[in-house]
Image 1 (cartoon, one colour):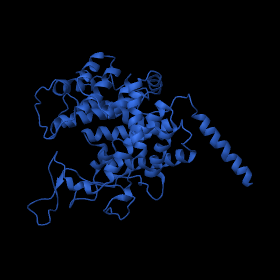
Image 2: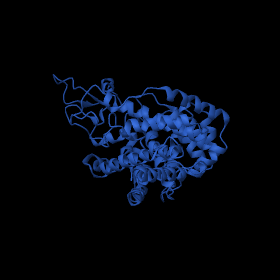
Image 3: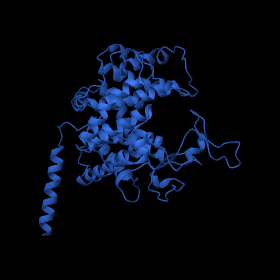
Image 4: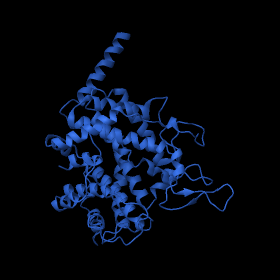
Length: 393
């Protein structure tokens, strides 16, 4: 009986690995798999060198987990993710400073003492870069490290994060976690695509597949059913866009097609209320970092449009009767970013042109318009954009 069980387990493993054998297209949720394959065939040598240089550094880097924070979450479980609301400060009129008050756009450096958000961002960024480095180079060491990191954050019982954000962006003296804290995982869908790439690797095991799928199914359920998740779904600004993008990609990954389709159908309405006919995003222009948040929301829209594209839904070229569209919103920002035209709204923090550079490369590819590439050339490149460059070729 024991030998029979071992034989069955071996067959399952072989079938799993054969399913995602070398040469097959990866199953992706933010990138068109055929375009990724073409990008691999046509990859620029210098870009590959740049990517491998970055990936080599990530292989040797040490990463933190939710267990490394110096404060215990309100529930008492260190496996629960915890972060502090970045724009909340002690009230100088109160002896103990509580409840904290909001200063929009002004990050409280004391909040960095809780390390979960930084550790999460570092790990997701590493998994993203390592998985794509593996795809473009076929070097197993990158897949092995990315797989190890996914196990470290999502699966290993000693270091794993529980699949919820109950204690994200705590506002001191007000609550123990808030719905807007769901923005903390806005880059989580990159892990979903990483899994699609790692399935081509011998480092990725059936237990990794089943364990990761179980985690994401639990997290999707939390997003859909928790009070914080339901409230964030109603957000009108970038929070709502990023929430929808997470739901679409994670639901697609988990095989919940009906959930993803329902969200995408609603997003045509979301686009209409967020973007004006001239391309302005009024809800982002209200912020003290209006240029930064207008760009940030467009990152959500481009990721959401990419996710929709993999499901045969075209948000990239969608335009309302009065001209509202993703393209119009990208175009509106161009003179202020590329040509340094005087910005008409608040921007109290330094603006990172690199964030807009990514949008220009995406626009050049999706709209088949080389003028966006020419505009992108005016903005200096950096290592973090090398994957975007490779995929845009």
